[in-house]
Length: 275
Image 1: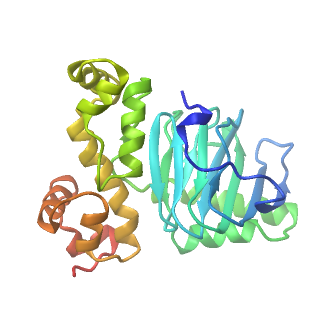
Image 2: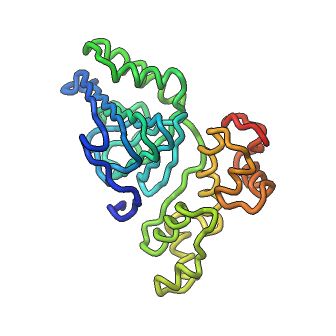
Image 3: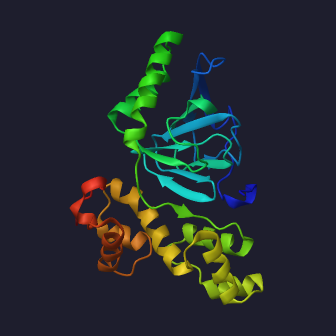
């Protein structure tokens, strides 16, 4: 379970760090939707919270959107948004100023099968246009028509990439979070075990039990998860490799190809150009 201590960003303060605009369309009805547009003034998080009975779709225009939810970590570039199922404890952090769009729909209105797992969504021209349209002054009828188009569009825009499971054991969680903060100089499992006063073998077992991955496998998954938004921002492959902790570009390219079946220089899904 997430706690306030699991996220390093200072919490955003309403009416100080952002200016919210709320647009409700039939919120008292089953098919209603509420759209909130925030003008975020600085990087920060909202703190861990739960939307009970409401699904949330979140999109940030000004930089990466970092989300902890269902014991998974997601780092989304502006080309993606995320669906957070109702009742899922989560924390959302904006890594830079910009516009944050949060759309809320009633629990029974989901276009996806029942699950507590967040879903990444490609924020293409249609999705971005619909979210901006819903955040403008509309009549109830106009808002509900746009909502129907949005729900029809969501399932075909699911963005598949490896999820990054987060352990909940305190020692394993601290190790994982330290890695995400400094992937280029990662913490050692042995050092984390020593600080927690347990053996490295015990810490490794806990990591496998809670994530299904060894710490080494998890680090590879984490590095690729951190690399994707950098690649989508058109950063050179050589620079991305260094930023996420690979000693050489060739090591990064090999890991990327093993996971995605293509080299980052080929672009494809992520539109990357090789240096």
